[in-house]
Length: 144
Length: 146
Image (cartoon, rainbow over all chains, first blue to last red; front, side, top):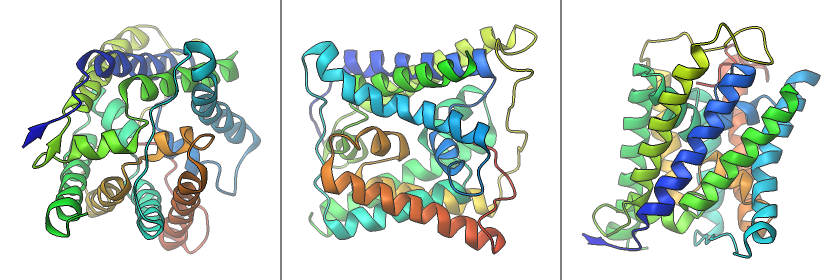
């Protein structure tokens, strides 16, 4: 094991921002900030109210990336190296799994753990394990 | 006002993804690569996000209800069933394969080009398949986020 590119201060600061976002949503509208849940609510049949909430929350995510370079003068660090086949397979699995498992990294990983939900803890342990196993197989067995 | 807070929550969440590096699939894959080039940063991000949320929720719940809504809507289920475990397992494989979970993938749409658009289209396709498989229609019985 080699530790690379460890960035503890931005990592902690970013985590606090995510926590503040989840707190704001709970304090103002009483809801869990689960991103896959909001995205799934845009799949028909949708109600106008659900659609507006989802589009604004998810639109805020996109707007942050668009605004970032103008606000800070820095580019958004972003690099995808996966093949087209991996992108399609990964997308299908993430979408399918988040609906079947009722949540993703935000709903289970942040909000669920913060509520001390045993269900979310189980989901997090499982998806962290299969994610790490997948990277292990791709990089060290298949040699990606 | 409620709608404004959805947008501001999204902005803050997006800023957190960018600042932490969670918006960067290369960093996420290094975080998951414990046996190789391990970048432990995102463990701190998860920890800080959970701790901040746990404290923030207690302050939020100390009030009678949310500021712009009638009541708090919290997931009520506590059972660990096969669907949860299977769904989480498949989700993790997809996350590891690319380094995108749903938030970072959506956030990166303006900068990620064809690769990000491909992932997001497939992700929505996967959600449609899951709904159809669950009910035979596109209506999902449980709409809880967690």
